Length: 159
Length: 144
Picture 1 (cartoon, rainbow over the protein chains, first blue to last red):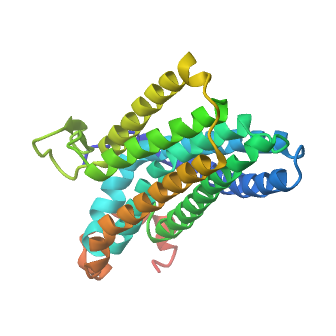
Picture 2 (cartoon, each protein chain N blue to C red):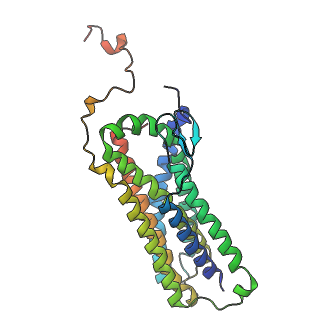
Picture 3 (tube, one colour):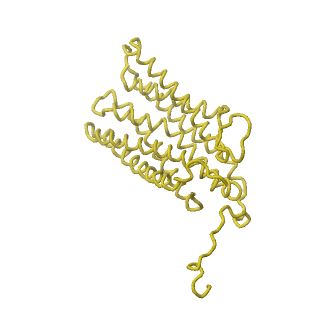
C-alpha cells in the first residue's frame, strides 16, 4: 500500500493535535469562568477573557487544521481497515467528532469578536453577554466531547 | 448601529448560511487518499473522504454571508441607525443558539446508522500490518 498524504509525519502532527486539544479544553473552561465573573464584576477580568479567547481560537483552529492533515492516514489505517468493517460505532463516534469540530468554527470566531468589544461596565453591552456565554458554553461542550472521543478512539487504535 | 450589533448580524447570517449548506449537503469534491486525488462525481479508488468538501462548502457559505453582512451594516445608512433593543438581541441569541443545537442534532442523527450495525470480532479481520520477524533478542537465548 503506497503512503497517503502526510503519513510520514503523522505522529508529530498527532502529538501537536493532542496538545492543541488539551489547550482548547483548558482555555474554554478558563474563558467561561472569567466571562461569567466579568459579567458579575464589571471592569474586571476583561483583559483575561480577551487573552483566553485568542488562545482558545488559536488552539481550536490549529486542532481542526492538524486533524484535517492527519485524517487521510487515519482514514486508511484506522477507519478503513478496522473501524468500518469491525467496530462501526467507532466510525459513527469519529464522524460526530469531526463534524462537530466544523460546526464549532463560526462560534469560535464569534467569541473572539465579542471578547474584543464587550465591556460589562457599559449597560448597553450587557444584553450581549448571554450570546457570548452561550457561544463559550457550546464550544466547551464540543471540545470536551471531542477530547473524550479522541482519547477513547485512540485507546482502540491510533495512527 | 454599534460594532456589537454588527457582530451579532454577522454571526447570525454566517451561522444560518453555514447551517443551510451543511444540512443541504450539496455535491462537493471528495478526497480519495489512496489515489491522492479529488473527485466530484465519479467514484475514486478506495475509500473517499467527504468531510473536507462538506466542511469547506459550509464554511465558505458562512464566510460569504459574513462578508456581505459586515459590508452592508458598515454603510452610513446602517451606522446612523439606533442600536438593537434588548429584545432584538435576545431574539438573535435564541436563533443562533437554536441553530447550533439543530446542527448538533443533525450531525448525531446522520451518524446513527453506524451505531445500528453490529460489531464484528476483531480476529475475523485480516491483519493490516505485517508483524516484523522476531529477532534473536525477542526470541531469547533459549529460544523461548
